[in-house]
Image: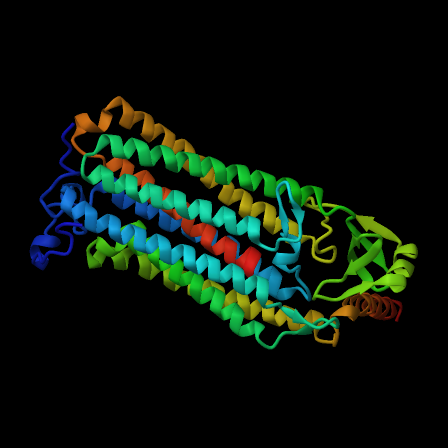
Length: 269
Length: 158
């Protein structure tokens, strides 16, 4: 953008006459807020890493999250990749809204900001579906066999027991283990979960971190809507600048930024 | 509504309003970064689908996996850098502001990751070092804790 990295003498820059960063007060403190919020998320993700690294075993993301709406399971990571793509696209529409704002193009701002809100709502909806599926669990749940916990699935009438780490047992051997199983579990809550019966913290971290992020997305949608209404009412035309669009834009990009890390550490690795 | 904390001189970001010609260049950058971010996500999902963490039916570690894991983290940081520097325009701010935002955060998070990994490695070592095979994890853990209880009871009785 124009004029940001021009040379200004040290004494003029730090002389107390205006911001030494040459940005407005509101934008500077939006950044400060985002740094503190990023520390919160950094702390949460590091705590997750702590628990995960300390555990003997941890569920594999692509095995836990392999369902698609309407067409069933067997699509590892496809749905969450779609969610990630939706959020990236809504980040792009936001940055286009900011660009339009710099040209004082009211129609452009309305169009792109509206699309950002729609993208945000899609993402929150997708997360709700993901939670619903995670809470309700796989079709048959997990059972406790003499070899330990295993997720039970059927290919036709053939039972498949998945023990984690890619270990699976099928056929008569699996049937014998099923017949002698002593406990079962389906879905997930804060106390137990079928994906990692030996590490109940797994679901706790999933609910807390994706929930905290989802709440940020929801808040972002509300902020964007408020600013959109103000744009339509012409508030920023009267003010002569659209800096509020830029500020909520910062928040919205931050939400996308956090998701990039959640995506990596919950689903990919 | 004129506020003197908003507009000081032409160097302020507020005065960075640009014309249509400038907008064309900025939009071009935006679309380029969009394509890069989408491609990285696609590559990540493909790698995740094709390379498994464990190989065979015995649950052996895939020797490729540590590299894949590091690769995922590097790609994530690349994506994050594009979002912060281009979408959030931090790359266009003055250098002193970039430093104020990035340096304290990176220092703190790197330190936090270091102490948490060091501590959890220690606990992982204490809790699970007697296990050779994941399939035996549970029984080994049970035995471990049973022995522990037993030993405690013995000590108490003595």
